[in-house]
Amino acid sequence: MDTNYRALFEAARRAGAALADTPAERLSEAVRTAAGELRNHTAEILAANEEDLAAMDPVSPLCDRLRLTPERIASIAADMESVATLPSPQGETLAEWKRPNGMTIRKVRVPFGVVGMICEALPNVTADIFSLCLKTGNACVLKGGGDARRSNEAITRSLHEALRRTGLDPDAFTLLPSDHTSVGELLNAVGYVDVVIPRGGAGLIRFVRENARVPVIETGAGIVHTYFDAAGDVEKGRRVICNAKTRRVSVCNALDCLLIHRSCLSDLPALCAPLAEHRVTLYADPDALAALAGHYPAALLLPATEESYGTEFLDYKMAIRSVASLDEALAHIARYSSRHSEAIITEDPAAAELFTRRVDAACVYVNVSTAFTDGGQFGFGAEVGISTQKLHARGPMGLPELTTYKYIVSGDGQIRQS
Image (tube, rainbow, N blue to C red):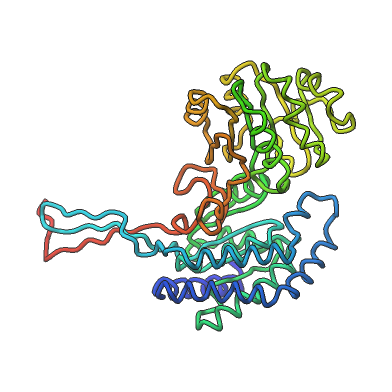
C-alpha cells in the first residue's frame, strides 16, 4: 500500500474509534452544523458544480445526476437535518437473554468503524454518506467520481468546517483523490476499511465486486418494471407510470419497462399520453406498437428489440411489452429484473398478493410509483444506497444498515465445565 494512502486510512481509523465513543447528541449537532454550512456556502458549491457540468458531455444521462441547484442543495441540507433528528441505532440492544448458568447475553448494535464509499457523478451522496456515517459513529472514506471532483471538494470543505466547529476530528470524513489509484487503494485497504459500498452504474458495481479485498455491500443498478394488470385502474396507471418514468430519469428507481396485459391494450394510448408530453421514446413490441399507432407521436414510437428489455435507460426512453397473463409478466421480470424495484397496477387483491409474494426485489409496490425507493421517502432521512443483495442489508440503507453488532456477556465468575 502506498504510504500516503496508509496514512489517510490510519487517520480515518483513529477518527472512527473516537466517534464510536462520542455521545449521540454531539454527533447529531455536527450533522446539523454541516447542513447549515452547506446552506451558507451554496454559491461556492454551485460555482464548483458549474465547472464540473461544463466539462461533461451535455447529452450524457449523468448530467442530471451531477447537476446541483439551490433547491437541490436545500433538499440535501434538509435531509441531513432529518437524519440528525432520528434516534441513533448505536448501542441499541437488539436482544437480551439469560442462560441457565446465570450469565446474561446482550446483542448490541455498534458502528462498522470505517466505511468506504465509491460513487460516480453523485455529489449529493457526499453529504448523505457524511451524515449517515457520522450519526452512526463511523468514519467515512469517499472516492467520488472524477466528473464531480470540484463539487465534492466544495462540499467537503463545508463538512470539514462543521467537524472543526463541533470539536470533532476532520479525519472522520476523507475525500480521496478522484484518480483511479484511489479506487485500488481503497478496495485493498484490509485492516483499515471495514466495508466498501459502491454506488453507481452496473459497470462500477461489477468492478468493485470483482476486485475488492475488503467486504462489499452492493447497491444495484435499477432495471425497473411496472405491470399493468387486467384489473388495473387506468387513471391510477397514468399517474403512476408517468411519475415513475419522468420524475427524474437518471435515478436508479426510474421506470424502464412497462408490461401490460393484452386485454388492456386499448387502454395503452391513455396510459402513455402523459409520457408524450415529456417526449419519452417508446420501444414497443408488435401488439403494443399497433395499439399506440396513430395515438402516440410517430417519431417517438419504435419497435422493441431484445436489447430494449433488461436495459437501464437513465433517459427519456422506455420499453413496452404485452403479456397474456400475470404469470407471463412475472416470468419477464424474473428474467430481466435487477431486483431493485418492481410494481403492479391492479384492483385485484389476489393478483397483488401473488405479485408481492413472487417478485424477488428489494422493493415491491402495489399501485404506487417506484419513485419512492429512496431513504428519505421511507422515513430514513437519507440513504447510503439501495442494496439489491440479500446479506446484511436490502433496499434503502439508512442508519441501522451502517451498524453491525457484538455480543456482550456478563456474569459473576462463571466458568465452562465441559
